[in-house]
Length: 66
Image (cartoon, rainbow, N blue to C red):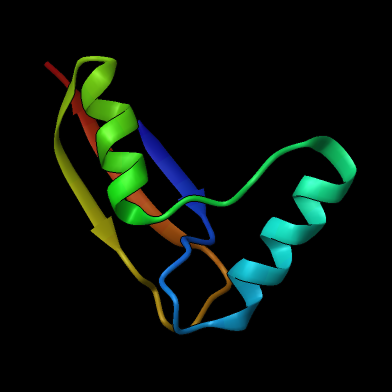
């Protein structure tokens, strides 16, 4: 599974602002890399890789189903 998402990391303001926007409009939220890892492992995914792109608003999470 490939997830393209702005990951919360505590250093960038955009993901936090996007999370607030999602929460106020649709009860959604951004997640940290460790939250994605935990969630994906609970659903049978392994070999989880997280990459912060740095030059884009979106980061990536790649996970392979076991």
